[in-house]
Image (cartoon, rainbow, N blue to C red; front, side, top):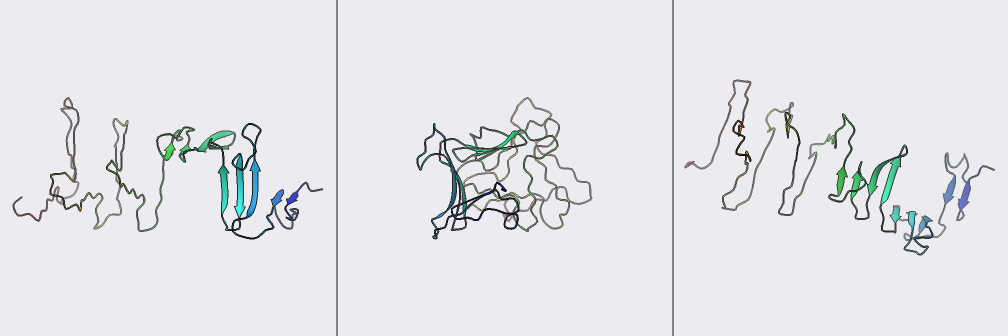
Length: 212
C-alpha cells in the first residue's frame, strides 16, 4: 500500500526502518566481490555486461558508479547543467567540454572566486608537484589596472611573504627570479618597484660569496 519495494530478500522499506527509502535492493550472498547493483540500459547501447550504467554497493564497503559506455556523466541541478565527468576522466564545472585539463572551471558567477581553498592546518594550501620539464604554475590575466598576482600576509611576523629558492647543485648560469618586460615599446614600464612605508630597510642583499 505504501508503494515501497524490496528486492533480493530485502525488507520492504517502511517508516520504521527507513525514513525515505522507496526501493531497497539487497544482495543476500556473502563475499567481498558481491553486492547490490542497479543497472540501466537501452536498446541502442545493448544489454550485455559491458553495456549501460551501474550503481553498485559491494561487501568491501565501497560504492561504485559506472558508465560502461563511451560517453560522459552529466550532473544537473535546478534543471540546469552544472558538472560533467568526461569519458577521458576530465572534470568540467560550468563547462561541458573539459578537453584541455583534468579540471576545467568556467562561467563563474559574479562575485565568486573560481577556486577557494581554506586551509586551517599548518601545511600547504595548494601543493603542485611538477615532475615534467614544464611550467608548474601559469597565470594568463587580462587585467589592465589590477594585479596579476597578489599575496596578502597581514599576520606575518618573522617569516616571508614570498620565497623563491633553488637547491640545485648545477653550476650552469640560471636565475632564481627573473623579471622581463617583454615589449620594447613599453618605455614607461618599471622593471621592479618597491614601496617601503616604514623606516626599515628597502632592500637587503646577502651573499655567502665574498667576491660578489
